[in-house]
Length: 162
Image (cartoon, rainbow, N blue to C red; front, side, top):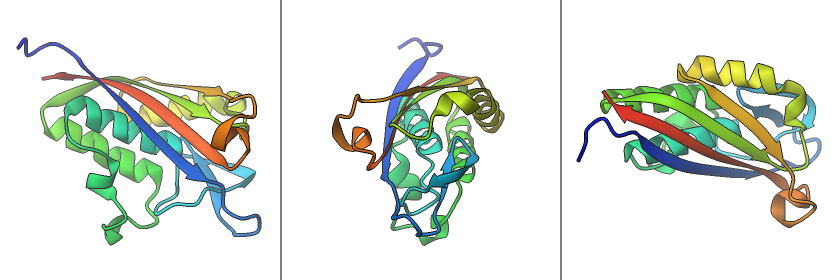
């Protein structure tokens, strides 16, 4: 096996919208989305950060989000996606990898990620220490995201051995 061959991982994360009036804030890509209903979850339910964590763990062969930060780990309850992603990057680097880049697609009808794409990419790139690109897509009314029941994040990550 060639030790300098890059490795690619895929990660997903999905969360349902909280009930209106629940007080849950919407956090995506480490940003607070004022005026939007938040997502339910063990932590802040930031599907961008969580999908990125899963993709990084997948690429490095280090398991998944649940293994490292799952609901059975009370110390991570209420943690921000930025905190989880920072720790995921530390774990990946500690395992002997560098991070090449991460790409995340947000699937849902709201919020419209395009209006804050540059800000979201800058925030996530700062956290990861490598380029992060973010795109948005809808499902034309189909499925869980199309019915406005929640938001899905799909990510890919490229890592390479040091």
